[in-house]
Image (cartoon, rainbow, N blue to C red; front, side, top):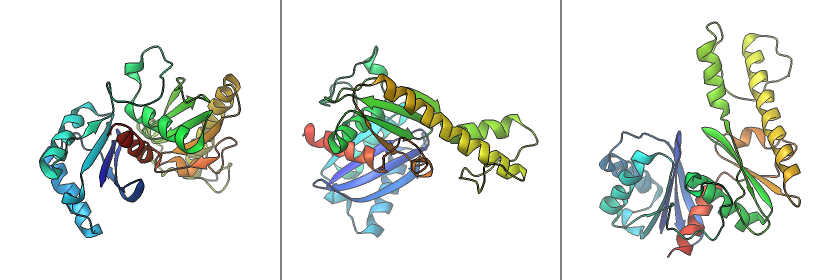
Length: 254
């Protein structure tokens, strides 16, 4: 089986693939200070109750945007699963062109999402990844990564509002009952939700206008489920898009 690990700034998503099928996934809090041993014990403790054994893993691939954890997880794969992990980065065969000024600056997760989107939905396309930051990644008809946009994630916006305004409470991000709120919590939820929805659709409208063709727009990331049904532009929501891209990359580099 293939062990796929996607490390984000807030969450780490783990997937187990049997051939091309994702048979199980987990979402964890990213902890940069954890050691290889701590991660190894954690992974094994997740596998066993679900009926999987460490010995079944014969390949591993890592996408990581938290530099201290890259070597930690490589060591974990080696020591606890007996495999050398493939890491998304320079030297890996991706099959896509990065049409940007500084290719080395493009996050591994954005590359992986572009590969998965183009393979699963075709091109042109735009991936909207709702994570710690929200990224907008356009892909051309022939599968080239064209650049994109990065906005603060909605949870960052909510936290900034709570930290900067002494009398405002911290609220859960969700769609309010009405735009016109009748209390402080409803007011904040309305501003966050509809303000962020406007940000997403505004960026997508401008991005579609700069692209050739009619792009299919795919959302992913933990918060994508909150917005994709309400967006004018987003057609699909695929919470496992990044894991699917890692599986495709692992096969391409085996």
